Image 1 (tube, rainbow, N blue to C red):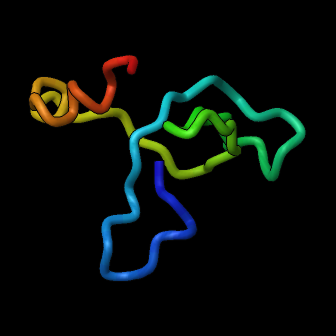
Image 2 (cartoon, rainbow, N blue to C red; image 1 turned 135 degrees about the vertical axis):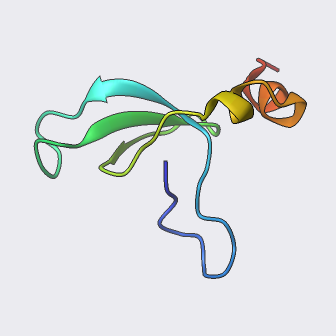
Length: 66
């Protein structure tokens, strides 16, 4: 998911969990995404984790529940 509040040149990609189609929000391609802070936001630009990201220890720690 891309964060709209991030300013260039910082990385605007943040980890989130896709919850499914966001009917009634923005357009038909929108997805509801759960952010790390617990807020659910509609997003059109999302991508899955790449295989190398999925197995990185840093990324695994981000996905572990606190």
